[in-house]
Image 1 (cartoon, rainbow, N blue to C red):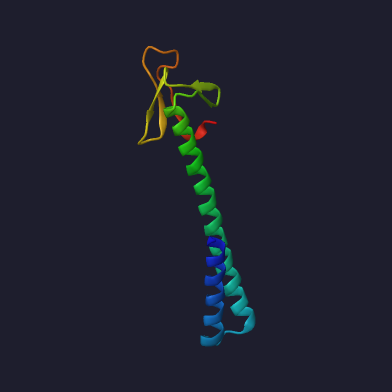
Image 2 (image 1 turned 120 degrees about the horizontal axis):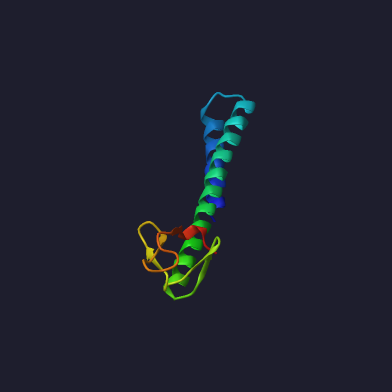
Length: 109
C-alpha cells in the first residue's frame, strides 16, 4: 500500500512540474526519476526496519516464554541470562558459565 502512495506522490510531483514550471522534458524526467528513487529507497528502508523489528519482537517473546535461543555460538535461556529490555540485550547471570557475557538480542535466531 505504501508503494502506491509513493507512486501517487511522484505522479503529483511530475504533474506540478509539468504544468507550473518552464523546465524542458528531460529536466522534468530527471527530477521525477530522482524523486522516485528517493521515495523507493525510503520505502525499502522502512520495509527492512519493519522486518528487523519483527525479528527482535519474536526473539524477545520466545525468551520470555522460556524457550532457548541460539545466539551465535551461545545458547541463551532464562536460567543463565536476563533480558535488558531497554538495550535489548541478554546479560549473563552471575555464578553461571556465561558470567560477564552480553548478547545483543538481534543477533539471535
